[in-house]
Amino acid sequence: MLYYTLKRLGLAGLVALTVSFISFGLLYISSDPAIAMAGETASDADIEAIRQLYGFDRPILVQYFDWLQRAMSGDLGKSYYFRTDVSALIAERLSTTMTLGVSAITFAIVLSVPLGVAAAIRPNSVIDRIALFLSVMGQALPSFWFALMLIVFLSVTFRLLPTSGSDTWQHFIMPTIVLGYYAAPAIMRLTRTGMLEVLSTDYIRTARAKGLRPRVVLFKHALRNAVIPVVSLTAVQFGFMLGGSIVVETIFALHGAGFLAWESITRNDLPTVQGLILVFSLFYIVLTFFADLLNAWLDPRIRIN
Amino acid sequence: MSEINSKTLESQTKSSVFRRRVFGHQGVMIGAAIVLAAVLIALSAPLIAPHDPYYQDLLNRLVPPVWDSRGSWEHILGTDHLGRDYLSRLIYGARISLLIGVGAALISGLIGTVLGVAAGYFGGRVDMIVTFMITVRLSMPVVLVALAVVAIVGGSLQVVIMVLGFLLWDRFAVVMRSSTLQIRSMDYVAAAQAVGCSTTRILTTEIMPNVVNNLIVIATLEIAHAIILEAALSFLGLGVQPPLPSWGLMVSEGKDMMLFEPWLITIPGVALFLLVLAINLLGDGARDITAPENRN
Image (cartoon, each protein chain N blue to C red):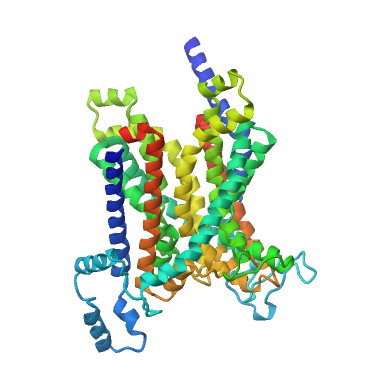
C-alpha cells in the first residue's frame, strides 16, 4: 500500500508539473503580457520598458521556472486588473465555488444513487425506464440554457427564488440544480450497472438463500460493493464540476472562482487565468489521487498490479 | 450447391438480424430521423430559408412567432433584436452546429485513435506515455482552457473547431486503447504476427476493422459533446462571433430580453437540445446494436 501510494503520488506530481507547464506555455506564447499591462495608449517605448521591468524578454523556460518557483511558495503573481495577489484573490472566491460544488455533488448523489438502485432492483420496469429517460434527457440539456429556463420559470413566472448574486442560501438553489444535474446521469448509470452486477453474484444468492431479509441483502451486502466505483466517479465528476462552474456562476452572477475566471479571461488578466487553471487542475489531481487510494485500499487487486 | 445455399442463408439471417436490431430500436429510429432532418436542413439551408439570415430589418424588430397573436406568417418564428428572421437564422445555425461537431470530432478522433491504438498495440513505454497524456488532458478544465485560448487567439469558426478538436480526444484515446488491448490478444493477431505481417499491415487489416465499431460510437457521442460545448462558448461570447447564427449565440443575444420575449431563448435552446439528444440516442443505439453485451 505504501509503495502504491508513493507511486501514485509521484504520478500526481508529474501530472501537476506538466499541466502547469502547458497552461503557462499556452498563455505565454499566444499573447504579449506587456501590451496587455501597458494599456491601449502606451507607446512602443513604454511597452519595451514594461517588458524589461517584468522580465518578459527572457526565454520562456527561464520565465516558467521563475513562475513555478514562486507558485510553489503560493505566490501566483499579481492580477493585472485588481492589482492584488492572485492567490489571495482565488482563495477569497474559492469558498463560494466550493459551497456550490459540494451542494451540487450532494444534490447529484441524492438524486441519482437511489434512482440507480431502484432501477437495478427491477430492470426494465417503469422506474428503470424513467431513470434511463431522465439520464438521456439530462445529458442533452445545455447547462446554460437550462439555467436561463429555470430563471424564467422559478424567478420570474413564480417569483420563488432570487435570480443572481451569492448573498443567501436561496441564491445557491438554482445553481446547485443546474450544476448537479450535469453529474447525475453518469452517477446514476454507474450505480445501476454496479448494482446489477453485484446482485447477480454468488454471495448475494448465498445471503438470500440463508434467509436474510431482502433489505439487509440489498443495502448491507449489495450496495456496499456496488458503490465502490461510484465513489471514484463522484470524485472525478466533482473535479469536472469545478470547471463547469464557470458557465453556471457567470449566469447566476455567483462571485466564485468560475465567475472570476470568466471576468479575467474577458479582461486579458493572464496571471489570474493561469492561476485559476492551475488551481482547478490541482483540485482534480488531488481528488483523483484520493479516489485511487481509496479504491486501492478497498480492492487489493489494484495495488498489487 | 448446398454449401452456397447455407452460406446465403447465413448471410441473410445475419443481415436480417442486423436490420431487425436497427429498425426495432426505438432510440436509433428517433435519433436517426432527427439527425437526418438536421443534416438535410443544414445542406439545403439556402434553398429552404425564407429570408437572408443576416438581413436586418430594423423596422420589424422582435416580431413574435406566428402562434403569438402579434405574430405573422411572414416571420414564422419571429425576428430578433435586429429584425433578422429567426427561422432563417435557426436553419443556418444547424450548419454551424453540425460543422463544428463533425470538424472537432474528426480532429479529436484522429488524435485519440492514433494515441489509443498505439498505446494498446505497443504497450510498455508507449502505453505509459499515452496514459500519462490522457491523465494530463483530463486534469485540465476544458471550458476554462477553451475560453482562455479563444479569448487570446480570437473567436472564429475555425478556431473553435481546432480548440475543441485538440481538447476532446481523451475519450477516443481511452476507448481505442482498451479495444485495441482486447483485440491484440486474439489468436488471429498472433497468427498474423507469426506469418510475418508488418506492423502497419496488422494495424490496418487486423486491428482497425475490429475497433471501428467502438470508434463510430465514440465519434457520435463526441460530436454531441462538441456541439454543446460550442454553444456554451458562444453563449459566453468566446466562441463563434456575431453575426454568425450560432444557436448558443442566439440564446446569448436573446438573454437580455428573455423576461419579455422568452421565445427568443426557447427556440434556439430547444433546437440545440433536440439535436444533441438525437445524436446521443443514435450513439447509444449504435452501441446497443453493435455490442449488445455492453448495454448496461
